[in-house]
Amino acid sequence: MFKNVISKRAIIYPLLMLSAMWFGYFLQMQGFFGSCFGAIIPLLPEGLLGVVTSPLLHGNIDHIIGNSIPIAALMFLLYQFYPLVANKVFVIGWLATGLLVWLLPPIDIFTGDYMYTCTIGASGVVYVLAFFLFFSGVFKWNTKLLTISMLVVLYYGSLVWGMLPEELFYNMSEPSKISWQAHLSGAVVGSIIAFAFKNVGEKKKKFIWEFPNYYSEKDDKLWQEYKENHPEDFMELPYKKRDDIWDHLDELRKR
Image (cartoon, rainbow, N blue to C red; front, side, top):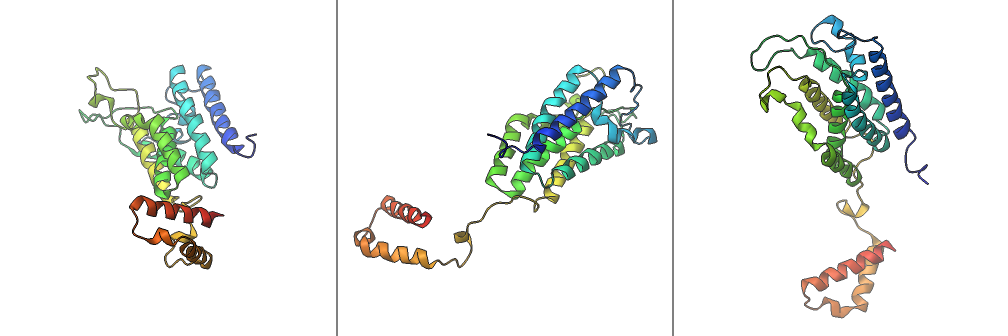
């Protein structure tokens, strides 16, 4: 029933990503990744590996479960509704976000002190996908894609708070372990990619009668026939009656 509706890629690619994430977590549990190996370490050469590997690594079971659900949902929407650019969005978003996190100086926003940080997790990619899906629908101004934008806002609108340091909202004895830098980087990258690809793929459909100087001989003939057969409708009429006439003409045009 759904084989011609749901894209195979919209199922396969999220499953591949989830498999890679959980395999990476399994390797972590076996001790293959430790002491920040595979993480993004800002401004240090050894941290560049994390640009590629960090989205596959997670701190604990809650961390990976918390990222798995939005990754699955948002990747499905990406590959289902943006098939022409989905791979580019995903790969560029992944690498650009990681590189931006690596370039951001790890400074305590309150003290200005340098902090040695190791960033892991797929939340940066989550933000890329969420912000791409939202802004792409807005930029294209397509009814179907705008619906996807509204779904993203409905379920993931609270993500916007993750782009700010938790220290702004809570009194914390030590710095938060949540990387707002990764979230902010993902949001910025996703928004930029949405703008860059706004003219690629499905756009808002424009009907022929919406173009300037539109003229249809068929429509004109229908109008003249209607005037001849219903002269009473062209007497002084209340607005509601006039609306009914236009609705009737629209029905005739669609036949």
